[in-house]
Amino acid sequence: MVNGIRIRCWKYQTTHGNQTLRQSLMNSCNPALMQLGKRIGAPTLYKYYEAFGLFDKTGIATSGEANSYFWDLDKVGNIELATMSFGQRFRITPIQLITAIASVANEGVLVQPRIVKEIQNSDTGAVVAVDSTQVRQVISKETASKLMDMLESVVTDGTGGNGRVKGYSVAGKTGTSEPDSTNKDGMYVASFVGISPVENSEVVVLVTLYDPKGKEGHQGGTIAAPVVSQILSEVLPYLGIPSDDLSSEEGNTNAITTTTLVDVRNKTVAEAKKILENAGFTCIISENDTSVLVTDQTPKPGTPLINGATVNLYSANNEARISQEVPNLKGMSYAQARNALKAKNLNIHVSGSGVVLFQDPMAGTSVEEGTVINVTLQQQIQDAH
Image 1 (cartoon, helix red, strand yellow):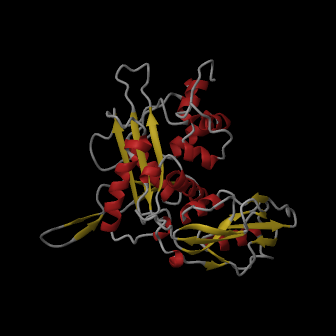
Image 2 (cartoon, rainbow, N blue to C red):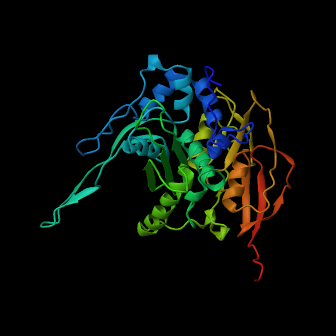
Image 3 (cartoon, helix red, strand yellow):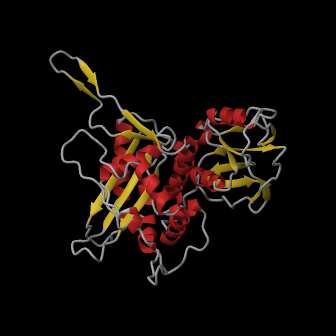
């Protein structure tokens, strides 16, 4: 209830219960995002809206670009804060939205959109490049990586399942905006944005459907996500982007490349973080003083890890270990198992292809964050008909 008004989740028949931020995004849960918006507050939200370029025209080289509509900050009350926390009661253009989302795929850097990459003179063959322009660093590279990982979960396990593309990893987010009761011309707006591949992203596609009609309904995950999936399934191969079988249940995980974890003990926290992040790992340490020395690390040095693996660091000031319960991975694809473990700051080592048949340690075991879970995949056997 907000000011006596009940604002429901789209899934109001049953509740989602307690959720992590990852789960809130996967479930596209309005109440969870409302709570987050309340904790962040309107001034900070507006700071990031501005940083992501949502208050200004993008400056794309075309005439007639429209701008967004937001309340003045001093007019944002509890209801306005609640509704805009999950993306309603303000208006932005598709080019503003996809530019902001592309900054997440671009390691947190906002780039001014351009229509063409280069202009070639058909008579002389001379080529004039249209250079891209970086506007600002909106969020850190580390934050962008974490958000991309969560958005991949939206597609593998959440409301964006219809945005999957066989053979490619996809991160995405659904959007469904209901009509504004104060606007007689109000209508549903359904959308889905897909980013692929998740690592070293090359393509971002946004499909927005205004006032959708038909028996399929008006949910972005239902009617817009399949369109994005179809577009990506044709565009990615056309651009020569190699298939990433790691996101497919039929993929051969022998193609997974690993990097040996180096020893960062006795280095400063700042040095250790730089080394690990340059190697493609996610570094976790509860230590504000970056000049102190790392005393231990999990996993241990010499462990082979996939890109994006989690490495927990400890110092003399903070040696507390956090334990996690190993989830049940049986029957999951590689991508699903990897994301389920990633959500608990656990790592994966995989062999075989198909879906999870065995795991070690077993489900329910309590292990330290950063621990590597060994997973064996096997192709599903289809019953004869």
